Length: 266
Image (cartoon, rainbow, N blue to C red; front, side, top):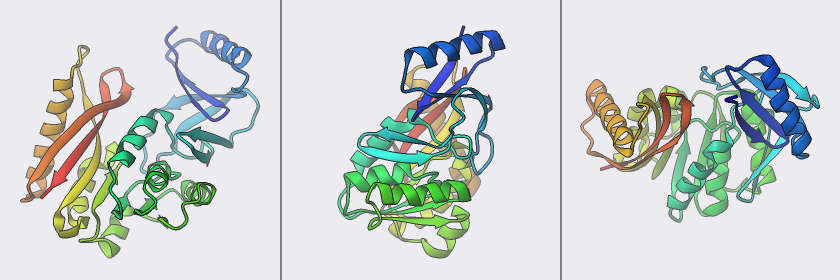
């Protein structure tokens, strides 16, 4: 039985194309073997909207959906049935945080409950991260998480559309920008460049792309290069944009990869 699962706090989220009997057996085994798992939710659809609200329903165990997820010394309050959060991005959060230099000004376009922003703030307290979120439920959790992780001095939360907020407040401002939403990756990139100070700096661009069954690093690099060329062409961008790094973050489906791309703009 091919069951995909991920754990967020005390909650196990499962998805599978298998039959219901197999899913029930798997969930019962996990609840029995792993005492720290107390609730099982079933993912019935992909995350597909701009507010990134997942399609989850109660499956087994306690009917307690608010949880605390801990990673790398940070803790995040959330309800995974109401907001997007993926523990499979934990390494990527730490990877980006490790790149940040002292006193950087950073914009996070799509912040969710705040994990990227908070991980950076904890690792680089001298940085300032402007953390924008459209989903009001996720925004409230982000405020709680900023307080819980003692980041009130350097993570500034905003509720609203990142495109409108950045256009009004942050043109020619940032040293580094985070774009952690593949479904809006292409649209966001040209504005992110304008938000960089003198249109120079680093952009962490997350995209999705089709990969073959025998994937290799060249596939990932090719997807990133072709997507960047497409965005440059469609937006008539004249900036010098270089790809510094690519990696597959995770699989979104059997042939679709979630890809991290580090861009340098000069």
